[in-house]
Amino acid sequence: MKGQRPSDFTSRVVAAVCRIPPGCIATYGDIARAAGRPQAARAVGNIMRACDRPGVPCHRVVAAGGRLGGYGGNVELKRSLLRAEGATVVGLGIRDEAARRWRR
DNA sequence: CTGCTGACTGGTA
DNA sequence: GTACCAGCCAGCA
Image (cartoon, rainbow, N blue to C red; front, side, top):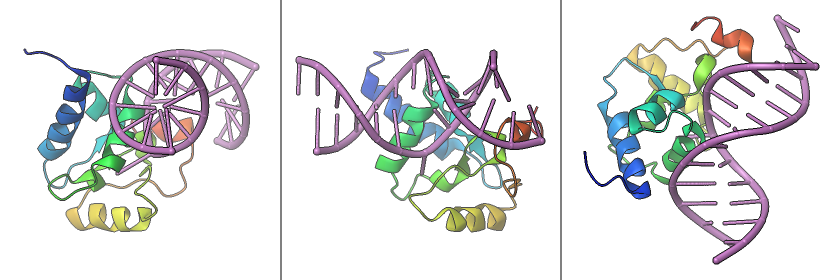
């Protein structure tokens, strides 16, 4: 690899999100793990919010348990985008760990 | 330079 | 099954 600077983490996160194929969704933890920080899911969310620019399908990034997480305040839009791509959005009445059961 | 917040996760009560 | 807490990371005031 290469010099792994803290800023590099951001680039890797964006690259990982860009790598998500259409019709597929990844969780913040997955992106964090792909970036090299399995526990940096929070930081990933921060980067998404700070890097919500075209080219980065942040709408394909959802929280664990089937929750959409957030989208600046347009979560419904995010849900529509995922549904349009055929992504299995299970975030309907899920709220907590019981939700992750569908995934585990 | 220091501290807080935040689009999260996992575990325990 | 549901609710709360603690931990980790990066960006910003």
